[in-house]
Image 1 (cartoon, rainbow, N blue to C red):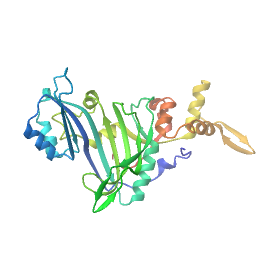
Image 2: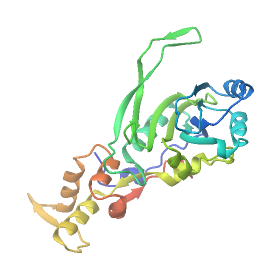
Image 3: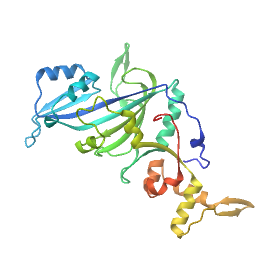
Image 4: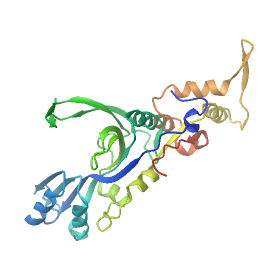
Amino acid sequence: MFTDNLGEAGRQFPKPVDRIGYFDRLQIHLVEITNPEVDFLREQCAHFEIDKGMWPASPFEYRVQLVQPSPLAIDCLDRRDPDQTLINAAEVAVDYSYDTDEEAEEVTRIVKRGLIRRWHPHHHKVKSLWRKRKAEEIEDEYIPDDEEIGVERVDGPGWARIKSVIYREGHQRLTGQCHAVHVEIRLRSAQACKGAKVVLGKLGQFDFVGIHKRRLAVYDIDVERLGRLLRNRWNGTKSRDPLLRKLHLVEVSQDWRLGSIMLARYSNLQEAVDGLGGLRKLGACLVPVEVGWWG
């Protein structure tokens, strides 16, 4: 599963030729909203929904969902009264585009394997889900319903307040540039949005790449060092040298064998870190992989 010679950490990966950050989705609760505001926001979003009277015990009467709101829609929200508006869900997305489809596939494969979300609950499992697209017509070509278009990596259940999602896209959603990789952080509560600084008055100046850089990282792992760390932990020792033993006249690192055995239980690095003690305890075994996303 993982490299034993830090091959990924030393490689030079293709750099993205373009990146663009945006709110893929915003969910807002409002005390009141006028019909002109509804009409304006509907025109400035890829999709717009509004529901009324769903929370009888709440002061907020309307729930508004905005998919890919434009800068004008964001500016309209920033001017609203914070006492009458509550942001309680957001999808903070960044699309990275590459020169070729092969470059995008290569980087996506490495990131799906080595992506770590800081402060990740150990009981949240990493899943790979098949993404399906709805039936639609593009340039007179009909695309059938439920066509499988890629694997989506999700590091939390549906009810999780915070989780990250990554998958391949044929093109960037806003600019249309081809060979894209879609990365987003999904926030599912008002507290999570506030902690990520998705708040009224600052939506227009939101740093999309910055929040990804603070919360996400890509690593490779030193298998032999991991085995030595686990051996020292279990034996109560402080050894800094590998434990070597002869096997058919060849010296074999027992630490490397132990690290390989332990990593074989996991399908990606996030699960390994969660299962073997957390990011703080395994930090010495991890080596950053530079994929050119957050530089």
